[in-house]
Every structure is written in structure tokens, then in C-alpha cells.
Length: 321
Image (tube, rainbow, N blue to C red):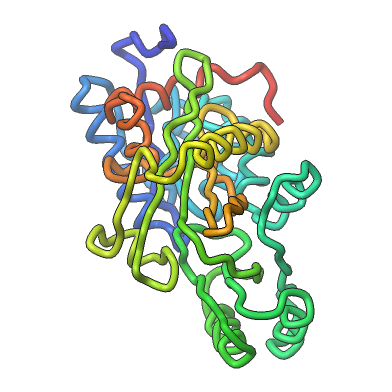
């Protein structure tokens, strides 16, 4: 562990909240991380991004633990500001954060490296619903999965089985906070995720986590109600499949230039296809969330996970784009 963490006077600011649609999840992450740090006898304070005085931040904290989710929190903006303020922070830098947040850009990189990902159409904000529907129909057919380009938690996402359902989904989408949407080929399968975590400056590929749900897809409700899902970590999928997902997850982590921690999401189809959906460079920090669950399966307790995360703030190269 980085010797900096042995300092009893290290002031840790847990940055959370903000104004994104994912604020509730960010609050849950921040509060859980803060409680763990305090319980370990470390100096920490919760700092809501919606109310922070950036001018005084450098005088208040020595390092930032990012529990910020969604636009503005994990898309490079906070990371760039902290770089400018010369405050070390956990996880990835500006470029990797921005790439990971933008699913269209991520897909372009994945395809360039011949990594399987669902076919998709980016829906331009200026398109009418009719233009978007006809473009999606001609490019992908039906059914399709619609989701924000820069969003998470399955917010504002859904399946459209025909043109009328797509029209309705897009009409509702335009009423939401997100500005850009995309449609993907719909692939039935088991949602899986793989965590990458730096421990003592070495990347560890965590065990695969899979989820079963009786809902049409792994939606917001299923992600926040344990009675609506059945989780397995380590995964109950065949070992050859989980090994492939772990190796691909590491490739994706390195491809986008992620640092310290990430979570790569997959779909495991009955056909054996295992396309990458996205990479999350600021995974949720709930003790019952995917990252903590995978860490526990690797033998890393939650308090230890928090210490590993803080160490990633001090293990970055001198310059990270």
C-alpha cells in the first residue's frame, strides 16, 4: 500500500452528489465510502459537488476519493478540474474518463481493436422522431435497445420491439435530462461485469459477476431492489467464458487508458457471444454493489477496497492525458 496512506493527517475528500440524473447513486456511494474511512480512523469529509467551493478545496483536502457518477462526475470534467487544482484523485484521468462515459466513442475504439460490441446507431439530437425511427429500422431492424450515450444505471433506457414502441421510447427520452441517445441491436443474455482493481501497483482482474432477472432487462428497478435479481459472484457461467471475459476486460481497461479501477460490462448470450457493452471508470461504491461484491469474492474486504482506491490517486504517471 502506498506509504502516503500511513499518514494519520491525510485529509480525504469524498466527492459525491452533483446534479446528474445519477445523483442518488452517487450519494449512496459517497456515504458508504465516507463511513468506511471514518471507521478506519482516517480523516475524511463528504463534499457535495453541488455545493463545493472550489477555491478553498486545496486548503481542505489532500486527496479526492471520487464517488461522483454520471455527466459532470465521471466524464473527465471533475478530473480535469482536480488536475488544474493539483489535487490527487482516485481512478482515471480526463481522457479515459471522457472515453468511458461516451458509449459511441467507446464502441468506435472497441471495433477498431476487433473487440465484439453490439451494433449501434447514434441518434442525433436534431433528428425528428420519424427520422430516428426510420434510420434505426434500416440500420438495425427490431428489436433494439435504446439508452443514453452518456448515462448509466439503466436510467432512460428500454427495449423497443417495433416502430411504435421506438417512437414512444424516443418521445419519452427527449423529455429526460440526457441530450444524446443511441439504439443498439438487442441481444438477450445474462448481464455480466468484470472489475479491474489496482492493488499495490499491480492490476488484479476480479471474478466475473453475473445477474439473473425476470424483468425484460437488467433495469433501474432490478439494480436497486435485491428481490428482483439473483446474483452470482464468482459467476456460475462456464469457466472458459468467464476467463475470456476477464481477459477482454483487461484489454478494454488498457485500451481506453483507464487507471486504478474500472468495471467492464458484458452480455453473455446463449449462443456463446459475449459482447462488451461499456466500461465504467467510476464504479459504484455501495458495499452491496458490483465492485464491492467482486472484491469480496477476491478476498478484499470493503475497508481494504477503499484503501486500494485511495492509493490509485498516488500511483498515476507524472502526466495522464
